[in-house]
Length: 527
Image 1 (cartoon, rainbow, N blue to C red):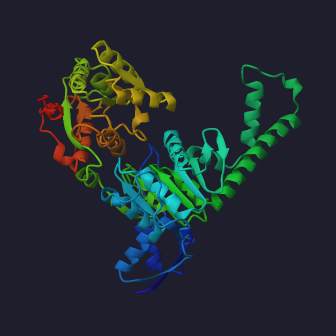
Image 2: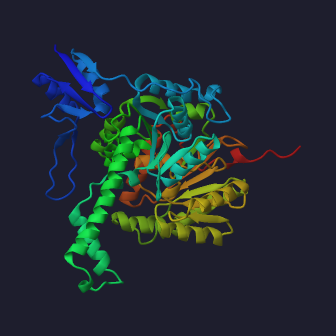
Image 3: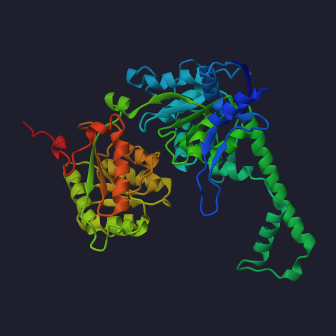
């Protein structure tokens, strides 16, 4: 068997003069099935391995080394040492410290980062991803980029760093403040800034702004030179901004991707390609490798590396960090116009939005929860459903508010505080509540929007699993469907299978037709 040399830096790796069979093996190892995108699209195999240059993303070095070794090769890595920590070995980043044995996995995660430099930390929702991120920041004390796709997560981290007197820069949400230490970046902002400007695009933009809007200008007032000058100014401004972002990214030594399962899209991947000196790169996510596309799942590893530690739902439930969940999969009566073969969009409308039978079931559960002082969280997929559901709940004497995507963080926090204080019986939300919402008071979660995506399901279930400050540490989660329809039945079955194969969740699934044991929440009578 051959001696295989792999040279690598923070971004890319290269097989050095590999034998043909070794190159073929790695090419096959890093291949994936390309999904057809429609009529006439090519569907076949592609690979993250460049057969001409023998290069591949550095995140795959671990798996390539392991698999080549497994078949008998001697693999030699050629690489610079990873960045070493400059901060304290046991950094204190909040008032709780690091001595609680229930949370020992947080320091174990940090030690894995110190050992390996790059990889994925899989932490079930509620396990404290933000604290792990802060531990990494405080331990390394190097130029750091914290990446997220969600404004709410960016500002939550900003607030937490402010609380411990760590100055941080913000790149996103119309801000561009970079500091030498911790920088919090919106993926969308960085991707847009990294787009290469094109003169023809800027020319069209100038022409549209001058002559295509409501305030059309007189074409005689501008000659070709004027238009080209304005386009050039736009081009130069974008080019200058792009160069500044690339220079900044080249200075970053530590990258932390929050909710980094979204690295499956190309955005994270493109940003990290410019982080050439970031030998420390960590993905924090509750849901790695759960996207439907094999390419997307592989791109997460390509960007960050292998899984370093897995902190499961079962572990967190056993330790009382998460509430013990009980799941009811409800099959409600259909709308009179819903049919077994109704197409998906119609099934969603008649099965969920316009289904009075489902609304009655939701109202019944919410009233039971309210009678026991349990705040409810109802999660829907569409705004019109949320609006209608709120009206129906209020008409039945329940105090509910509906949080929409356009609601700012001030209003979100206000409504969540009203829920915690008891001024509301519940909140209805769309995908804006899927991540970044910590509501320990929630005792009942209603999944009222259907769907089959595993990532979304786990995030939504996680909204109700924060440890309870009072009463039993349990949560009731109702998954509503109308299984007369083929699509809705199939999607609920897929959601149920996800729960069934999750240790810590599977044990709490109720039998078909069985209701929650609401008595578990009843307060004992005073003596």
